[in-house]
Length: 172
Image 1 (cartoon, rainbow, N blue to C red):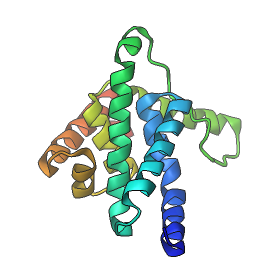
Image 2 (cartoon, one colour):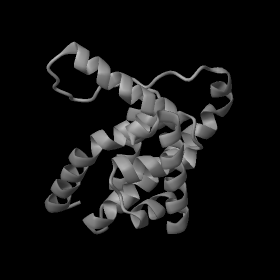
Image 3 (spheres, helix red, strand yellow):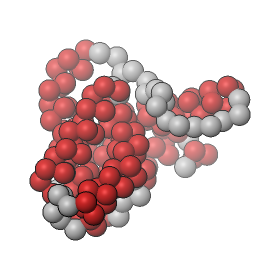
């Protein structure tokens, strides 16, 4: 890999790392597994797709990440059936807030959203996180998840309806 590509790849990862981690964390609810999934996805992108145009990296990266998450789900299926859902913790976000009370309110709200997300089917979770958090287009989301653009629209609409119902209309 040449120096220009390496620098572009480094910049891409710096810009995507935290969002990818938050997405993996929201879906796995496990810090170590989320970090490992993101790191493995980055390595696969470098090894297999560093020669591609930089504009292709985001959807390729998220496709790799979501395939890794699907594999993780398959491995965890039986052990997770018996476990209680653990609330997602916001340990690694760099948030500068003025008070512990404000931080607690943010944690509570994020926990409410994460709990609501956990009640949705996996595909709705993935589409919601890619569209709302990653700000990916319908086309990029469809490519990343290997589904049609119409399926993305349907899953996103259903996810939004479910979130509105679970969180109440004041939390849209």
